[in-house]
Image (tube, rainbow, N blue to C red; front, side):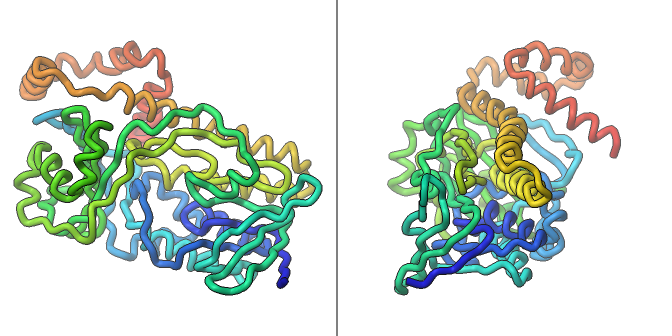
Length: 405
C-alpha cells in the first residue's frame, strides 16, 4: 500500500479548506488538500461575502472581483410594501461558489508545498494509540492510499466524516428551522444602485444578491410546512412566492432561470469541539447555522485564519494544547454572537398582522412621523433587544465604522 507523509492533510477543498491551504502554504507547510469533487463545481451556499478583507489577505480579491462582480455598498430591507435602505461601512460581493472556490484552490496550488487531489474520497482515519496519524484515501478507481500527517483537518462540511470518525462533541444544538431554496436568474430588472435586498413577507425571508451584471441569486427561506409542496415543482412554487415581494412581479417579467432552483429542508445549527488528538475541524464541519444572515463563507475564512495562527504559534515553540484551546476559545468568541442573533432572528420571524403592516406602511409614507421617530430609534432598539445585546452592539459597531468613512 502506497504511503505518503505531510505536515497537514486537509479534507475538503472549498472555502474553509482551500483558504487554510493558502495560509499554511505561505507558512511553508507541506500540505495535502483533497476533495471528493473536481473544480470548478457549485455547492449550496449563502453566496454573500461581507468581509472582503479575508479575500485581500488571501491574495485573491482582484481575481474574485475580476469576474465582473458588482460591489454591493447598500442594504435594502422590505417589510410588506415598504422598505428601508442604507449604506454599508464595507462593500459586499456575491460570487458563485464555482467561481470563488476555484480561485481559492488555484491560489493554494501556487505553493509548491501544497498538493491537490480531486475526485478523492476519505475512506477512514489512521489512528494509533488514540491519536489521529493520517488518512486512508481513494482516488477515483485507484487502490486506497495511506497518507500520514502531523495533523488532519476536517473541512468537509456539515455532515463531516472527519467529525463523525473522531466523535467530535456537538453543543448548543438547534434542529433545522427553515427550508431554503435558491436559483440564479438572468434578466432581473436591477435597482439604480446595486444593493443586497432582503424581503420579510408572510413569515418568509427572501434574498436578492446581485452577482455579475445581469445575474442575480434569488433565495427564499420558507415556512417548514411549505417544503413538501415546494419540492414537487421548485421553480413554479419559488417564482409564485417570490413575485409576491414588493416590485418583483414587474422586475421578474423578463427573467430567466439559469439551471435549477435547488433547496434543502434546512441547515442544522451547532458548534463542535474543533480539535482533538491529531485532528481539527473548520468551516461547516465545526460550526453551522441557518443561512439567513449570510455569513457562512465569512465564518469559514475566519476559522481558517484562527487555526493558521494557532499552528504558526506552535511552530514558534508554544504549547500545542494551550494554542489549540485558545483557537477554540477565540472561535467561539467570534462566532457565538452571530449564532445567537441568527437563531433569535429566524425563530421570531412570524407573519406580520394586517394591522401592523398597515401601520408600518403608513409610518414609512409619513415624513413628519419618521422625523419625529428617528432620534429615538437607538434607545428603542436598545430596549427591545435587552435579551440579545449583540444586536445593539452590532449596530453601534456599524455606525462607528460609517462615521469614519
